Image (tube, rainbow, N blue to C red):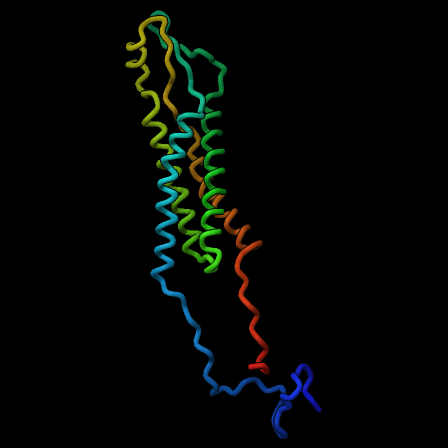
Length: 206
């Protein structure tokens, strides 16, 4: 009688246990571990790319974010729009730009490393690169924007003049939008379109 699930022609010899596991003295197949150097290199490249894109984030934020307007009247600095929400809008613009860059970097990293199966270095590189890029974009936007010394700016424009206030990120939680978005998108892409490892054959086929 042939053992169930046993391929034809592989009938076990008489007197042997057909359900016995492989011999304990049989050496397992060696597991090949990928080298660490390429993984670290990939993570470093993705991190550096995030830092470079941080410059783009800062310039776009400086260009698109609204500013708080001031005017000088009788040696006093007044808001041009006391009920304006320019500070909240500036945080919103920064968050939307971080969201877009998070999707872009995750998609690029996934397509670049998809053939080799990605790895933990890709996720770590995206997280560190996104956080570093967010900090660089924040600092670059505030430093290239108008000065934070309102009194000096008011003296420069004179009585009756108007000027824009500094660009500020009042909610620092916006710095996490880019790295969090990149991580979530990478996980979604890997789960949906990632490389699949073939199933191991049953023990009786080895």
